[in-house]
Length: 274
Image 1: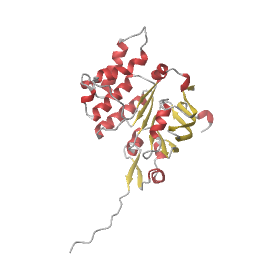
Image 2: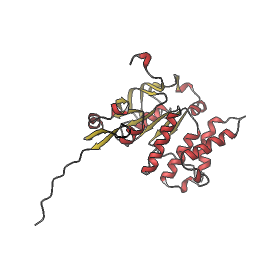
Image 3: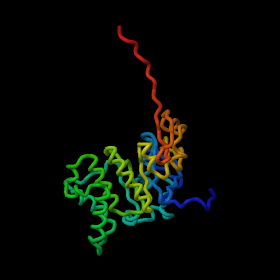
Image 4: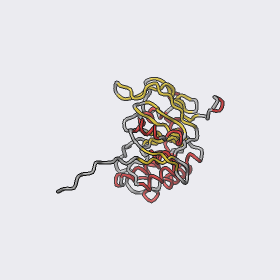
């Protein structure tokens, strides 16, 4: 692919260094998130996936380097302007005590309001659509702190959707969800991508990431090991090098997406007791 053929990027990190405390987790990282993609970031625990997502959202300040949103440095945008264009669902967000699901989701509209422009029909439409899309419309009047872990997660996803941003960053959005609701969330993310939005999600399930994402970034030890289309990234060699996993990779008979089959570990047979 020649430089003129390179697809446009919604988010670009250049020489990004970020972390917590004295030791950075990411060092001089270059990242391109293709515009209009559903990008999944995969890798073993503590490899820097969530740190990268937080740095891409400006929630974690970069120590050096910069992050560009459609060519604009994030630090040149006000908090309100950034919130209109980019939304983040962090891990384990703190829920205000006693707040209902509808009120929580309504907070996703704050960036669209000003001193002279208060609540509008567009705000209510966005909230209703977000509640329905996340599958929590029937929970709108329930206090969030009375919900199960999975229901809370979907309520927070609805808040993110209510922002109606062009870029969504989701940090482990399928946490606490059973398999059916995991699929619902990933189908929702894929649907948003098909509508033209850019979705970036940290995912633990390699098979789910390979099946639903259009672009994968594989990380280990704060580095990007591979990136590209799922069939190019999810290989037996990568699983061995990144996840220390011996597995076969075969194409899904329906979609062609890579399917990971861990190799069985043969355990020694115990001799029969006498």
